[in-house]
Image 1 (cartoon, each protein chain N blue to C red):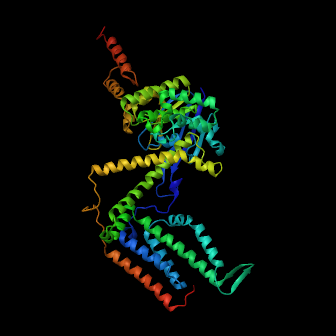
Image 2: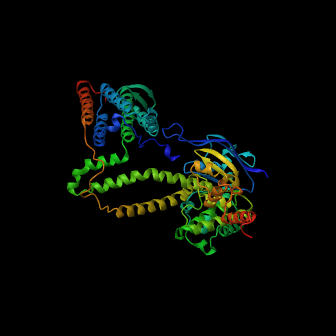
Image 3: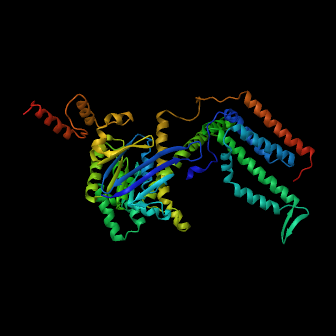
Length: 270
Length: 289
């Protein structure tokens, strides 16, 4: 079923990572993603791996969900690392006709695959531990300065949170409609590609109809409660930074420094 | 009469291996005789919708067997579609499954999937429309131009057009006005009487089920707690109330009278029956002549 995808799901909990300010988490994620791609030595790569393992453990979300989120990208990891292996420079270790494997190529493959894995794990950690509403709230707050140049920050944040809010609803609806059409003998598992694409029409049409119906209903409901955009709007839950956010920024700072120092002091492998 | 559907120790667990794991159906065994009208009642979340989705192989039981006409429907998973034509299933709010350009085409969808010839198809569609009380002139319209009640009928007709041996209806009257409910319900009864097939009706309206069902399955907290003739079920009013189900008003009055010591038979389901019962009682006691 469509619901089996772990990537992007939220697991409610009370761990340290759950309680961090969503803005802090978002900023740290961006910083971490940048630093992942600035690792050029094995010690710095090790720091990144250790940090990843640390926040996975701290998040309190069972490790198997992290593995599940990796399952989606495992092919990308394999393909890119294999390709990188053959693109290295230097003296070849093995040679097969035009295919050459060099030490440089192996290093590249290792770095690329570990970087992608850490990237997915870090992003998964954010979505696993932050509810979609908190996340869009954080994005809205972080983008607030852009409002000065008449960028519609609130509107975009609202659209994002509505879209996220309706993902599970529409998934559930898809399931229901699929079941109903299967009950009328719709065959979605066999036949060639054209046949299969055609088989989705009985699901897509009702799904679109109901998405529009929901949109109209929601718009009416919002207007009934006098929604008129973000100006002067206060919020029910005000997020604020606390001591633990400062501490985690410090930890992230240490990681960044560690990676940079390793890069400066040690010879780069790549 | 022989059993058309048999469930043997059926279990169903949602989301196995996730934090959201939930047992929806817990060890249910039941057999349904050919030609019966069976009501299934239970609270929201009692597992009745999950149970009926296993009858035509839409979901596969976690353990246990589903037998149709004595044969395990999962024996050959590739043939599961054939079961879906034999056990027709009308979902809750079925109007949301309509998708074709015309009502006619939409009703024909299931029958076409069965591979009916065009002659047969036309007859099946028109007959199904008639059974579900859809006016012939609506067949050429777009399903999205119909009223709510008409859409519901069109969707039900789409399942009837497959001419299933068993028709399962999940809350077919939900969201209809009282008049619409009555008409739709009596149409289903008429269809059942004419076609002489087996009908399963899921509902939490006691009044609806009391009126039409021969037998009733009562589900509570994923388990089957009662399965008996309608009158016998409703004579157990206090048990039903304990699991949060209401017996029809008139049944409740008659049960209360009985508790107070009046000689009244069990399981009075309609006002007419109650009237007959009370007047015969009064006659016996010489209060009226």
